[in-house]
Image (tube, rainbow, N blue to C red; front, side, top):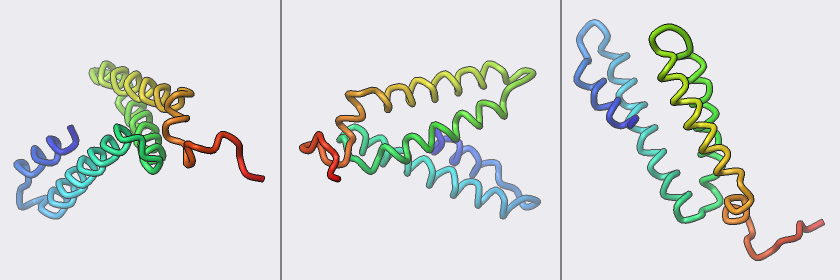
Length: 110
């Protein structure tokens, strides 16, 4: 979705806001590509992917808060519910077991 927003931003760039448009496009495309890598890591149960996934959902919760009020309240609710569902899924015991650093060692080393 962010890559789509990045492409849409690229088509709205004009001379008055050239630098802002270009940097926003690059940011959205890079962020979208990063999320694809995180999703791939989660699907392969890579331990590194848990942190970025949680961080992204916390950003989405803040974004949902910023949309609250007026005609964008529905967007806010969708963003918040989606982020909460993903966070709940990531912190489920099965997910935590699959994404822990050493799947073969159930006891912490002291």
